Length: 274
Image (cartoon, rainbow, N blue to C red; front, side):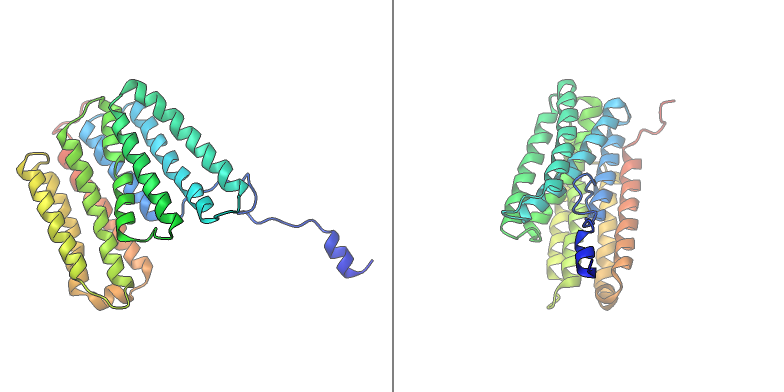
């Protein structure tokens, strides 16, 4: 038997991405941070952690994971990938099942679900038109992930407050600031004007949330972390544009956890119940 015949008789080994039974996981590590931080601030605002809170966290995680294979399938256009459909369906079924159970306990969650569905539709349309990296779509994505804050609050307490709306806006504005900094880093014709303009508008919104007592002084102070990041970008532009991406990731992760610490501590009671 010739070598060519022998080699053709050998079974073809499929890569991990081709085996339908291998689970898919989103590679967007930054979004994991956004999801965790937003959820924790929502739980801090609820000042409690129940079984419903845990289920809400699992639901949010599964919902986030479901988005990844479905988006990959949309990118395939006319080609159907079994792995994407299988895992997109499994994650979706898990998220929808938990969401339905939580809705029976807290009907106000319907507004959170509606917002998440709208964001998913916008994202799918953007991907179809190859505009998923547009500023508008990225802000919508962050706003959707930051819905985990009111999701945690409502699932835990079953109630609604203007504070949780303010907290959702605070999280969205903080994490969306990263978009403009990263765009500055990647741009061939860099300009800090978009970042400065965004942070100015965001600061005005944050001040309004404080003025109308939707958020306390200590809570809105957490946005100061975003302003410190902006100061780093403005004063060290060459470094920011040329340093390895791992350094930027470390900066963003550290800033996110500092933001989470300030915001969460400002929302927790003076003495935690034993």
